[in-house]
Length: 339
Image (tube, rainbow, N blue to C red; front, side):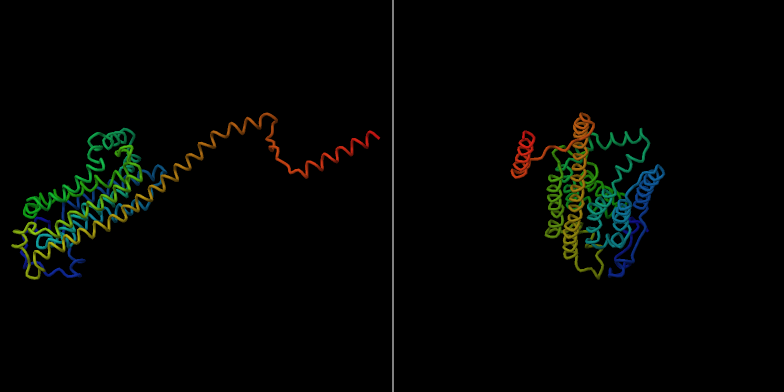
């Protein structure tokens, strides 16, 4: 059953959403499934191509790309969240935050851009690099602009007719999914994987501050949704609310609370991933500095050794009792020879 067909179900046809049904209720979303298959196939092709050339690719990156990235896409679009998002607001809110925050984080940690650059043939690799380093991408991924895009996307979804119309129109609902996913990727991908798109002043400490700021900004839509007096897509949910619903107003408050909770939970692994990247970059810079010093000192050591075909130990400073004893012994030997 597609997301559009789910809109045709009446509230009476959907049983009460229990913990068991939250885990067991699924539906097929063909466009979302196609996106997951294409992304997974391209990623797998890149990994296989590198391994055939004898170049390793971290299994952990593959795992997080599949489990957290593609997994979040599947859960958001085909789990019980998608089954019940047309009769309850809070599943739709969780859906959107998964697409906006969780899935982009998982996809970015898989580092698909670097995989594409390394796996593709030379000409194709250069084209990809030109695109992801182009002016348009640089503008969209500029830290403050990308954060504003995410915030504007969330506010547009909930406080314009966008969301209510998407509940009625199947293709617009799918487009909204893609819109949220792309907006989230604009923030996460450059910070964690595509540093070339960031300005030179955006060092790791600055990025850590931006991630902290982004975590605060991501909580804003949830706070507004939870405290907003007017119902979001109220006409739709009042008309489709099932008898077992906790109430449309309470349902909206649950959705806003879930948005805040997930946004704050996602901020922690985001910051940890950035700190790990920062530490790894510091180790790489230290190792490179050591190698450069070794290269600069090697000619000096070779020049000293070539003077006497051996490197002599430098003269050490001796204490007074050693030098005075030697001088006394030398005077005694001279006096003995004179006698």
